[in-house]
Image: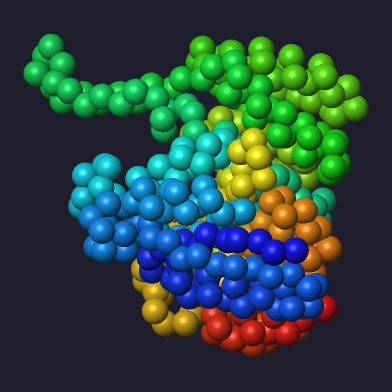
Length: 358
Ligand code: NAD
C-alpha cells in the first residue's frame, strides 16, 4: 500500500521525535511491502518565524490532501508573549478545526516494565490500568464565543461560552461506544450535569445513543468524582467519553498515572480516515536539541495512524511489540530512567525500536 503523510515537526523536541517515528515507519514499510511518502509542512512557532502565522493555509491544504498527518509538538518560550491568534497553540486548535477532527483518542495503559514509574500504590495498580479517554475536540468552551471587556463597574471581565449541540454530542458518543465494542464493552460518560445546562444535554444525548448499544455497559459520572476515581480505582474504567475541557484535564491526569508524558500517544479523528496523530506532551524546550527526548509517544502515535487511518492492524501491533521489547531490554531515555536500566539517547531509542520490528 502507498500512503501520503503530511508531517508537522513543529518546535522544540518536535523534529527529533518525529524523525524517530519516521525511522520506525520506514522499517515497517520495508518489512511489510508498503511505501510511505512524507511531505513536511510548517505549523507553530517555526511557522510564525518563517511565514508570520502559526497555521499557514498551505499547511491546511497539504494536510487535507494527504492520507494522514503526523505531528511532533509546537510552542516554546520564544512565542509565549504573542497575542492569542499569533501563538503556536492557535495552530493546534486551527488544524483540528480545519480537518474537522472532533474526536481525540488517548489510551492510558500501564506497561509492565514501567510499573515502578507509576505514582499510585501497587495495591491499586495490581488491579490493572488500561483505559481510553475519548474527548470531544472542537466544541465546548475552547471554541465557544470568547469575550474580554470592561463591565459596568469599570472592571476588566472575560468569558468563554461552553456550547454543545445535539449532533456534536451524538457523534462523539458513537466513537466511544464503537471503541468499547472492540475493547471490554464499557463506557463511562463524564459531565457536570448537576450544574451545567450543556452537561444536561450531554447526558440526554449520551443516554439516547447508549440505548442503541445494549451490549455495552453504560454509566454516567460527574467530572469531579471521575478525577478522584482515576487515582482511587482506575481499573473500573474502559472507555471514558467527555467534552473538551473536562477531557483535556482528565486525560493529562490519566497519562500521569501511567508514569511518563513521554510514553503516551494520541489520535484525533473525524468522519473519514484522515487523522492527526501526535504525542500528548509538549515541545519540551528544556531538553530540545540535546537528543535526550523520549520518542516513544510519537512512535506509538505512528502505530495508531497505521491502525486507525490505514487499517494496518498487524503493522501497528509490530510497532507496539517493538516498543515493549525495547523496554523489556532495559532501554530507557532520561525521563523514564531507573536504577539498573540502560540510558539511551532519542536517536538510539529509535534505532533500537526499528531494529525490533519484525
Ligand atoms: P511539556 O510536555 O513540553 O514538558 C513538560 C516536562 O516533561 C518537561 O520537563 C519536559 O522536558 C518533559 N517532557 C515532555 N515530553 C518529553 C519527552 N518526549 N521526553 C522526555 N521528556 C519530556 O510541557 P510544557 O513544558 O508545559 O510546555 C512546553 C511547550 O509545549 C509550551 O510552549 C506549551 O504550550 C507547548 N505544548 C504543546 C503541546 C502540543 O504541541 N500538542 C502540548 C502541550 C504543551
